[in-house]
Length: 455
Image (cartoon, rainbow, N blue to C red; front, side, top):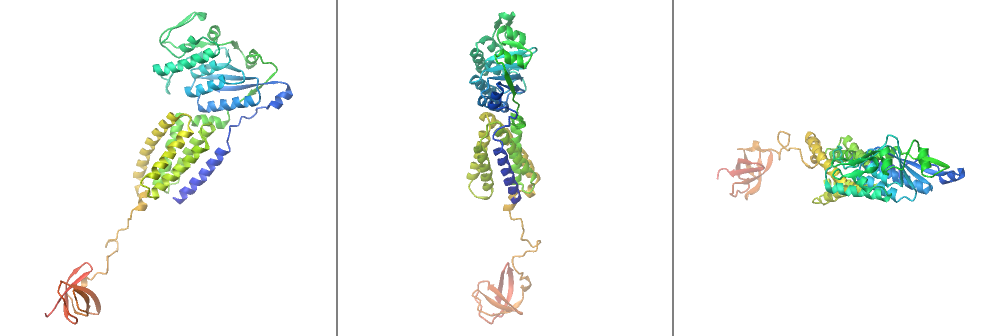
């Protein structure tokens, strides 16, 4: 156990130092305002909205917008090519775009599907490349299957409609991108969206119905359409830490890391001496908090609660507290995991799944290595048997039926001389004076019973 805690403290310090050293992701290669001013050019920040929309991308966009504002950029171009993603993160990104003090332009270079179409609609202007598309924003689950829930559909439809109306676009088309049960007539392209269909627009159709302001062939053409001349492009890229954080904070990976953390630490505590489970467990928890910290969700308070929870659970194993320390430790761990996550309900689901799976694994491991379990420290295994070489006292069985002389009065206990040995004895209840002949009639454990002879 001592070696385990040495590893725990070392890894804990390493984790804290790592987290403290990455207070923000590195957005390298961004020229400052002074450089742009010296060159007499306006800054145009180009921010990619690529791959799936999740918490890591949200945090990346928040930092990128902050950098653009600090540099007093003239335009932010969102380079969109995404199949969609988590709606909650998309809504936060949309809010960021709508509240931006800097003009925004969505440049759809591939697909702006699902949540990607919402992000594009939130921008002040939309331009599209040939062969790109926008729409198909119905709600689907993690396996891509349509979620036919009227409540969720109505809520998401209203969000899409609000984004379209904010920039004076046809609200019915936005609703038709989400709700398959409504009918939408698009006269500009001589098309009627029927029940059971979802609106998805090509670049040409989007231009015709007002969901694209121009079709462009390059980034320069897109920026010039926005009315910016004599500019300098600032291409912002996600750092490797932000990409890693986006992967770590995905629901599946987060659940796996929590499972490794719970199972590893529990096995190390219950079956000490392995070392590897403890290290794997701490790595699991460390990566979980690392990812959420880089993504901007976890604060130092959640890490403090996590360490406190581990300490309380360990103390519960050695300090009688009637379960109070265990309850407080478990509460601290749950609170730390939930506080570190972006979505509370999702964190609780991941924690629940990880806990159940970890309990199963811990039970299996504990049964396999039961001879090494921590409970063995509290069980006396030495057997004080004759076979093991232990006896309760020196055996007196050889005195049975032997005669002796009472050295003291036996009332009913006293001492007798048997051969060369002085022996403590008792009678069967009668009194015997000193200097009387006696005989040993019975040996009862440590008691030697005598009676008087010649009486």
